[in-house]
Amino acid sequence: MNTRYSRQILFPPIGRAGQERLSQSRVAIVGMGALGTVSANHMVRAGVGFVRLIDRDFVEPSNLQRQMLYDEDDARQHLPKAISAHAKLTRINSEVAIEPVVADLTAYNAESLLADVDLVLDATDNFQVRYLVNDVCVKHGIPWVYGGAVSATGTFASIRPGVTPCLRCLFPEPPNPGEMATCDTAGVIGPIIHIVASYQATEALKILVGDTDALNPNLEHFDLWNNRHHQIKVANGRRDDCPTCGQRQFSFLQPDSQEGQAVSLCGRDTVQISPASNMSLDLDVVAERLSPLGQVERNKFLLRFHVDPHTLVVFPDGRVLVQGTDDVSLARTLHARYIGA
Image 1 (cartoon, rainbow, N blue to C red):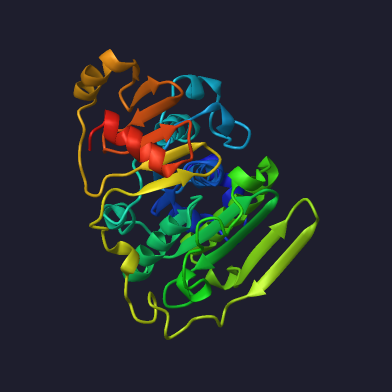
Image 2: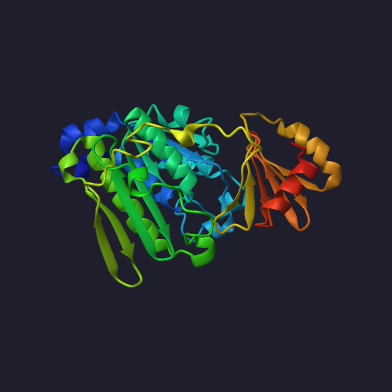
């Protein structure tokens, strides 16, 4: 073991044995936005052996206020977040195997992306995806750490299948659209991101080194601006009638046979349209077809098609971000008009 981790090894709960366990551990991070960039930074610097970075999006100027791995060059190049994060983190610690995955986590790919790791860190801004993570982790017995932040408030909890309540024990159904504050409606400040993600990372380290007695048994909530901190005791919250961990019904893992899902993205004036099944687009062909109709920009990861006042961002996996609107119906219309699928 080299000296790069010497200060961490000196910390008794980790020590040399714990560091060795970290080096052999595999972690997946779902979402490489604000929480994900902080969590990934901690995991890679701590020497976790393998880190998978999963994100569907690309870097924009509005991200730079709180998404700490990215810079203005990333935004100018419209780099996918997973790709940009991979480049930065590899320069930080070349000993860690880092796998960038530019994809939306869906029922079609969730098990292939999450079932082979030792721990999952939730860094999404989407409750549907969290329930999907919960399904995979309960089904395969993988611990995961829930986290969320908006405005100046944040929440986290460690979830260990078979030991603690799962997400669906605590919150039986996802909230309806519009019920929860988002960064689009309430904004967000950078410091709350670091607090929540650092707590998540600490819980992850405890799990990976095997110090489960030190795990936080509560659902923690912070209001940083108003100096409030609440602990909600949930250790006894497991429910036999929980559809997921009680009855082992993994409904969020059932692929939707309906048309592709369209969702408005937090704080983006953007609608994401995802295909109803796995697909692969040839972006060269798409660019050739769209070039006569408007300005097309390309890099090897995505295509941007400008048709004022909107921009369609097309990914090889068939996902399209319709920028310049939060109207799902209008986004679907533009998608059908220009992408035709």
